[in-house]
Length: 156
Image (cartoon, rainbow, N blue to C red; front, side, top):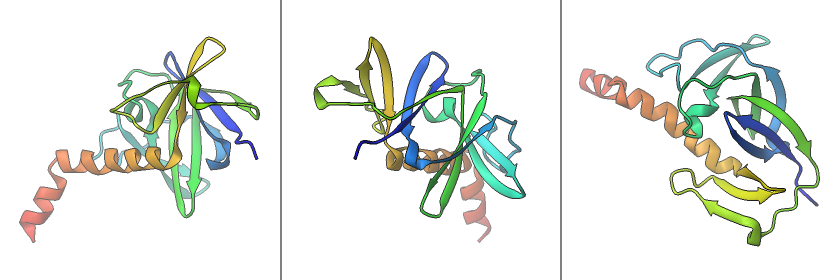
């Protein structure tokens, strides 16, 4: 069975994530602050009364601040729900045939993204488990860098 992909843009780059991981696509909102996590990394959104941790795509994919976010992808894997703010959702592709021979490179810093050349365009294919691992690391590293973990350990 072929995998369907949801394609989205972040700045000038195009990415695709397995459609099976996407529970919902929403209009982007400005998230609220998570204590000890900079808003440039992410925040919290209220989605029908439920809090949702949302990461900025620029932070996750190393594109830095200043991107325009139009959509939020609500991603689910098991009991885990996390949001990803992206530039714009562009399409769903049910016929994205990718062979190993077409893989251009795998970025050492972002090993959860394989870049492929498709119709003259470079597309980053996102591996969900690796993405979630990176997202978790960003949130916990932000807290550690701001002294939250050290202060807590010193108080104990």
